[in-house]
Length: 133
Image (cartoon, rainbow, N blue to C red; front, side, top):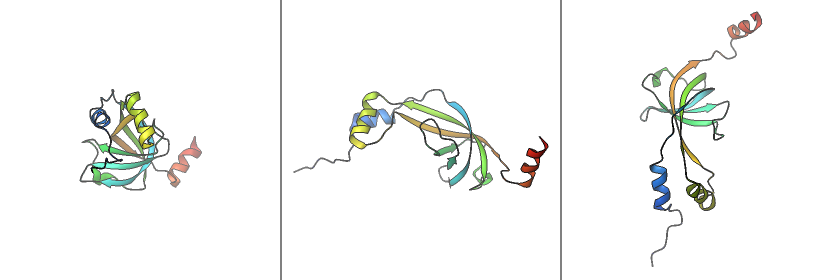
């Protein structure tokens, strides 16, 4: 007797997710810090102070060719400039994921880090700048 795998996702759901069509990217700027770096994949995990569109504060970003992994430091505050790519999912797939897998997801997101600026948060120099204004 062949037992059906309960964890298996139907082909029609997998196909839509794998072939999702991304809309024009939205340029965003948010502050946060690097949590983890994955040099073999040229990606980072970033903790953002303000959430992205789907409510997450932690996102994985692909690094553009302009951003070098060796220039990044974990735990240091940066202003990240990145593109948010969004691919909406059909209502049918969203409902399946919610009912069958208890996953609330109506779009797939990808993030590409374009540039970043080191913010000197908490230093005496930053405090002096605030006093002069």
